[in-house]
Image (cartoon, rainbow, N blue to C red; front, side):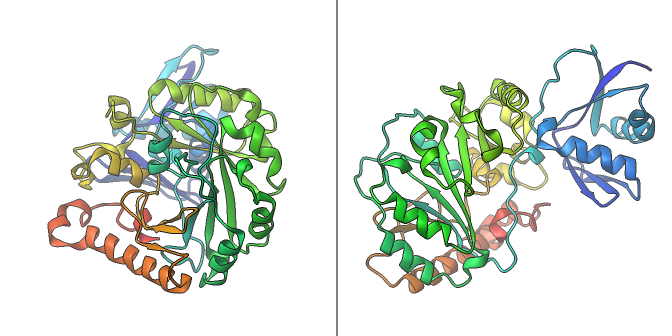
Amino acid sequence: MSGTFDFQLSPYVYPFVKNNNVLLLNTKDMNAMIFNEEEHVATFMRELLKPSSFGVVRLDTTTEQYKNCKTFIDKVCEMGNGSFQKVRQRSKISPVLNPYLLKIRTPAPGAERGENITLVLNHDCPHNCSQCDEYARQFTSCSKRNSNAVMDPDFVKSLFRNLSNPESCTLDVCGGDLSLHPHLDRMIELFSSFSGLCRYHIHCRQYRSSASKLPENAGKVIIVDFPVMDTLCFEHPEKYTYNFVISQKEDLTLCRDYVESYNIPNFYISIMDASRSNGFMKKSIFLLQDELECSLGTFPFKDKVRIINSHYFYKTFILPNGDVYESSVGGPIANLYEETPSNVMDFVRSLHIQSWEKARNANENFNVCTDCLFYDMCPGLW
């Protein structure tokens, strides 16, 4: 066998790489392949797991890399855990959406439940994105509402004073269009002095109005959906992290093309369920497959998408009017203008613990989570 080949893992295989050890977990039959102290294999897998590889590594059979990894590749394909397909040398690589391409949130040391906070500073926005409401429900995103409410800087000061451990807190800042907030400069001063991690999220349509008003060295996430209406947001890709929103197979190919064309170093992918329940998602992401042993098939499709995006449990959402939400769905549970912030935050943490532990451990939900292989990895634990 000689020539040029593309290697990829099957969509139901989850890889783990630590030091020079590799584990491939087949989530269909719960069998694992383990390769211990194999440096070349670990290096090869790290290349595959880089977001910019989009789940595929191209190999020439005359190279040392292939010779060093041939036994590994043969075993993986023999066990049905991957494929090694011959391709034309100069053909374009077809990207693959596997679960490890998605953003997996890990907790900061000392992080407490409920202290991953999304602050919505305002609702005003001149744009009319067709999926605006759905985006905000399924991943961290700006959102437009019919409201003139804006968050007060003194309110943010009070909130910061009542965080039990701000150093381990993650703060996601969204609008509306942030540039339309009347006290944006004061808000930025507060966020710049925040001791935890702070990130601003803006849609690519807001790039022209908002990006230049945000601090140069701040964490900034640009939400990009397809078709891309304005490529100016790719002008200085090293300054931003890009959140590409994928809802169909063609979007993934476009995402790969933008990453390669503009040399985008930092990006992640969010899954968007546009209520189509299309076959692409169910085939591409093993956690969403209905027949899985981990029993996530009993969740409604949109709930499974939220779990993938680490957005369903253990985040606190605070709107400009002070309303506090424990989830991206449902109604407000408190208002920070009307109640003591410390009491509200304690209440939010207790609700997070109760809601997740009930979902995981209650008798009526036994089959949902108890046997889930990813019980200890699930975002609900953070």
